[in-house]
Amino acid sequence: MRKDREVRDAKPAIDGRRGFLKGAGIAAAAAAAVVAPVAGEAQATESRSDARKARYRETDHVRRFYATNRY
Amino acid sequence: MARMKFLCDADRCIECNACVTACKNEHEVPWGINRRRVVTINDGKPGERSVSMACMHCTDAPCAAVCPVDCFYTTADGVVLHSKDLCIGCGYCFYACPFGAPQYPRVGNFGSRGKMDKCTYCAGGPEADGSAAEYAKYGSNRLAEGKLPLCAEMCSTKALLAGDGEIIASIYRERVLKRGYGSGAWGWSTAYKETVKT
Amino acid sequence: MRPLSQIVARLASAVALCISLICVAVPPAGAQQPTSINPTASSVKEEQLLRQLNPTVAGRITIPDGKAAVLIQPAGQDWRSFHQTTQAWIGAITILGMGGVILAFYFVRGRIPIGAGPSGKFILRFNGFERFVHWLTAGCFIVLALTGLNISFGKTLVMPLLGAEAFAFISQMGKFAHNFLAFPFMLGLVFMFLVWVKDNVPNAIDVAWFKAGGGLIGSAHPPAKKFNGGQKLIFWSVILGGAALSVSGVLLLFPFTGTTIADMQLAQMVHAAVSLVLVGIMIAHIYIGSVGMEGAFDAMGSGQVDLNWAKEHHSLWAAEQGAKGGRSAQPAE
Image (tube, rainbow over all chains, first blue to last red; front, side, top):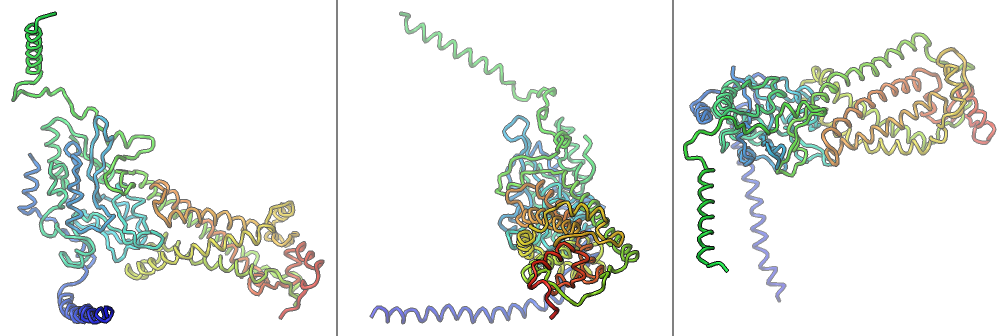
């Protein structure tokens, strides 16, 4: 008697878990669709000379850092 | 052209390890890897000093010289970066590095090394600036955002300086002049073949 | 007994004295600190630490990674110069030098023939297990040597041809191959030692063999047993060199397990130097076992060598085998 009940109770739980897998498949496909155009518009890796370019700029933020460190 | 450097004012460092924590949090550095650490020398003795150390972004970087796949490159800012796509985790850079900066996740066979990870001076890697791929591999790219490394920016005692080498050296010189003492710019003679004259 | 009031009065005066002393000791607020006091007088100096006999700057850390306690290790610069310069010179001398010697030898001496010509009769020199052990070790060694050379010199020699990405990929594969094939190589070394050590004990015959130029210089064939002096030299360089490579290699394979940064650097230097010398020796071994001498390859190929070859190069061994009779003079298949 108890066993039957357990089986009945378990059924929707399994469905719930596998339903998540179905959802995940759709989500993955959707994610791929979303990612693809993004990867297309911006180069994934910079060219060798681009990677070496200077990034430091003396912005207000940086100047404030220097100023507070002078105390 | 500004040349990025780190300078740790050991007379100010109180070994709070906030730089270590900030770095780990900012870049979501994985378990077991510390891009920055604080070493206390002569601990418990008179005159002990703590120094916060990460990659010093050396001039003529030893890691780049010994790398068998040439994965390192120095940017125009003087920041030494590397490509995790090329790195094979051989460990040579750690043998050559004077500061113990390169770190390796333990993902290889026989407990050997995965792709090397080190301080990027908060300047990411060869992926596009600020991209998700760059963040996943190297962490955030603050330098491209017009900011400086977070470890230095949030240092509670303003011990750790980052930025243009000439400016931070002058800041340090002013401090030494004002207070009358200074234990020197740790690591500079090794990394940049120069010291801060005070 | 003194009256209580007297004691109380004394205590009160003592307390008052203490308070006044403290007040004197504490300088009034706003007073200038004496400039003669230097708080860094006793502080550690980087310069001092770097001027030590064995300069390292190390201390205490609060993270579990013990090797992070070393703040500055100038020894890394020495290792760099070994890796960039010394290692390249060792490689150039052993490999190019040995290549040059062999080329010169080939032009002077040519292929060493079987003096009496092939007899057509064969005797068993190496059985199946001996050949398996040889080729197990040899096969592993060749892959290990090529991947090792690739990691040492590939950046200069191979990367310009392939480009960074392709070169990094083959180097990554090479690292895996190097790590995994280390184990069958070490197994082969152990077997090789067990199978052949009894025939490789140096003795007076070897001295005579070397004095006679080993048959390499001049056309005389000094007598030899199963292994001649030259082969014993190869055997012991493989066993001892292989042992050095195994020990240093295992240390490198399990980085920082019971080793410090200095140990790791030493292990790499031993590994690189010994392997480059061994590669040089093996080039000579491969040459004389294949192109350099008629009939030599059969010993490790089919295991059956020509009777005349055996009589010339291993006269004592051939006589021994002949005395044993039976399977010694087997006809070719």
